[in-house]
Amino acid sequence: MKFYFTPGACSIGIHILLEELELVFEAYLVNLVKGEHLAPEYLAINPHGTIPSLVAADGEVLTDFIAIANWLAEKYPRRKLLPDDPQRREAVLDTLAYCVNTIHGQGYTRVFTTGKYSDNPAQHAAIQEAGWSMVRAGLEELDRRYAAGELYLDTFSVADAAQFYVEFWAQRSEVALPPFCERHYRQMLQRPAVRQVLMEEGYYSVLN
Image (tube, rainbow, N blue to C red; front, side, top):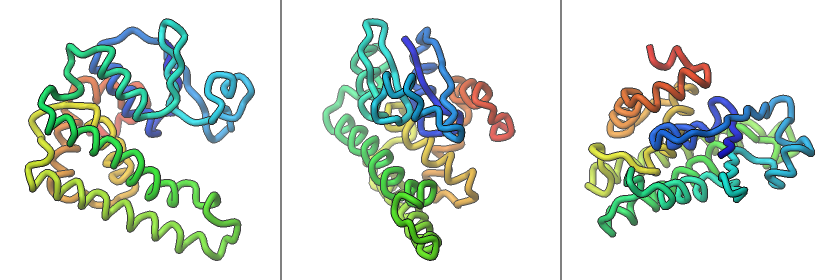
């Protein structure tokens, strides 16, 4: 199995899932700043030029966070990364998609890839602020789900890996997490797999 990632990017969530499953894999660093995701060698693996990418032992290639997370959960069911209970399972899948497609896909993309939304530099500040508003609203929505009993702090699933990276980005950007998200983030930092991944990706300071 081959895993293509960028330290501190959304791929950190998949990295955590791989370590939680105790899988053996080869890790390949893709430097986004240097444009390695657009190199012909990488585009031959992932034509979208995105990370993460996972190449299974049989050669199957997965190039989307949700697809990879679901594949790992289904391929290795012993870890129960997806709950057996239908209601909890639905909540987990919905939260996974919400973190990746809404908080990240609509909020953080406006903050981190502002130029994709406008070529006019005069509009960039407003676009970024709109992005931060979406991020904050998204985190508040996650908090509401915990308060309503739709999400749980006593289990680990594919959704937790996605939620961790959007919380991690908020913390790195000095965006305050709402109460339940703060608890979730602190609990995740105590997981051995999370601590290992943070150390491997060079984020020792987060553990202090």
